[in-house]
Image 1 (spheres, rainbow, N blue to C red):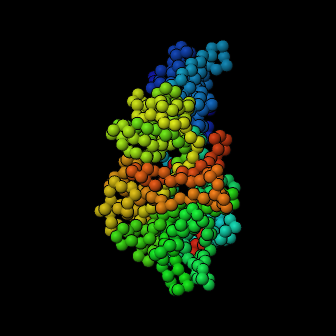
Image 2 (cartoon, rainbow, N blue to C red):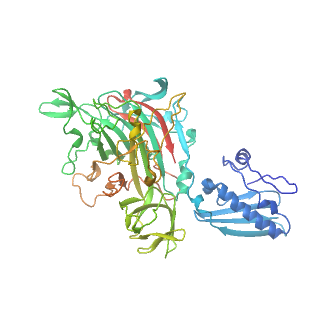
Image 3 (tube, one colour):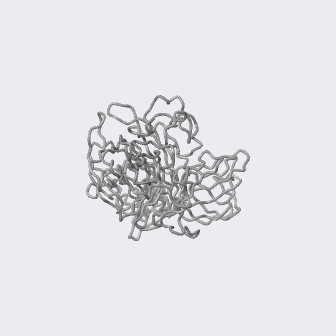
Amino acid sequence: MSISNQRGNVLLFVISGIAMAAAIGMGMFYMISTSSLGQASGSGMNRAYYLALAGRDYAIANWNNRTQLTGNEFIVSNTERFSLYIPDDYHITSTGIVNKGTPFEAKKTITVSPPNPVTSPVKKHFLESFEDLTKWATGTQVGGFVATTVGGDKALQVTSAAPAFSSGTWAVLAVNAIGAGVDLTNSWKNAGYCLSHDLQVKISNSQPFHMEGLSFKISSSSDTFYGVSYMRRKEIKDGSSWVSADNISDSFRPDVPDALTDAIDTEPLEYESPSIRYSNPAIILWKRQGGTFTWLAYKIMPYDVNNQNYVFNSSNRLIDWSNLQVRLVEAYPLEFVAGGPTRLLHGSVVVGGTSGARARINGTPIMTSETWSSTTATGTLTLTNITGTFQTGENLLVGVTTRAVVSGILGAKTNYIRVYYGDVDSSHDGTRNNIPTDNNRWSNPRIVTGSSNIVHWPVDNVSDWNAANDYMTLVQWDGVNTCPSYCQPNCLPTCVPVPHILGGISSVEANAIIEDSSLLTPNSGTIDYSGIALHATGNTATSSYFDDFAIQY
């Protein structure tokens, strides 16, 4: 790899993204500070030392692309180069080389630790306003889609649905990662082969029954994935029984015998006639695995004049452009006790006081008790970028300060899923607060041409939730499926994986986190379970519209 240079009284290297893309095909933008290289003169060993320092600076400047840097050699001039080896988040080995392959060759290798802020990469963003479909995998879509003008601005319309998954009719459109410039592979590698991202979209469907939302962690076979949807069902009377009449799979209905009451179909219901009825509206988290669909968790969302959710109206119809969001954190769990007095936060690097093991906290810690001030907080850290082995009973340090004590062993890689909803009604903006789970929040209106509206995301640390950033509501689940379809008919205790609701009753995220240990990315090689899509299903799929789709990763 080659880095061009210019000499004067002071040696100055300015590396532009365009030049670098042409030279090494990395497509990144950067600039190297030249304070180190400016001294690369004098003896060969001195020059090699300052080249090694320049390599260190280069690695730090391009930390988000470190997996592309490691193992490579960068040519500065005919006689000067450096090589980089970055084995993990905590070490950089840089070797400066002068006169390589000659009798005058000189080498100097340094190994350093990057500053802590480097270990929490800046998040990247993608926003789609549906001016066209060039960023979508139209060649593999199910059903039909078109970018069209709705309410004075472009949106995605479902134009047709087709039989799919051996379960009803579907319309599914996946993101074309290359066309959209969304590099989840690099993000996954940089997090120690753990995939985390946030998704959101605004949805419109005026029909009395419907199901549409976001699909994620789609496998390369496109037959295994998670989904989260707004859903309302239709039934008709068949003799003395009520049966589904919406062409939506009954696998999404929480009615597993002996495990969970069919809460979506209990009263109150809206009856169109004595022979037609509609369920309460709901948010459903679900997955497809092993050729079948199964629901994971549900949240009933009926209209309540005393506690409006602003997503469903007084007729229990979905309000146009209601927002649906999901936060996925794939990480390794580590339980702790004696947390405090300062909180453990997303992005912090924790170190085992005895073992020397290191890891980065990815996501808000999952709390069972939030008594930080008395140093008695307990919960679970979700960790990535792990080196070494944490020991039960050892102190957990951030910097040189003890913040908690390890109370178990590191668990296996797991998915942690949070879901959020929002609305466009500005009449309640004055009710916003620091409570993530209530219906008091800012409105989150559609982004239209000429407006100043923007995309809003949940804060990384729930402790930072306040009235200024309260744009969505964190779902507190009403129930979780303790007997998924793949465990039936016997629901054996040994059946795994079974989803769990996390978040202690006294925590601000009580019953808000779904833990599921399936659909995991591999620990090396090529990424899988990383696809993202929009979906609609059932007889009213063609009444579905999407806008303001966004990814944060």
